[in-house]
Image (tube, rainbow, N blue to C red):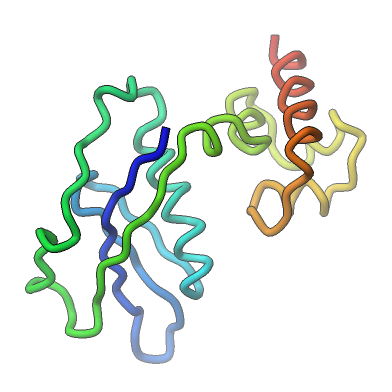
Length: 145
């Protein structure tokens, strides 16, 4: 199921690059990224981390973008909607490896895969084909049992 949460993007300013993000509807949930694309990736991860373990019916209701008050933020802050797809997030290699207590190195060893490839899967810069990801997830789940 897909959920859409507004996030306040706050440019880091000065010589620092990137953005800090705060979620209006998920109290205490925030993250950052080195650029807009990176911030969007980590935004999904932050939402997933906060909502992990909750029944989907207990997820916070998202606000409308127009209801997000920016008066307490710097003038260059803006709101963007983050799509959180539970199927994509909770059925990924990184999520299953985390549940199994495996880090990147351990996952690479389990799969007999190159470390750099698994690292790219974990940080979202590359993904295997969907059919292959499903097989890898099953392999990690079987190893966790």
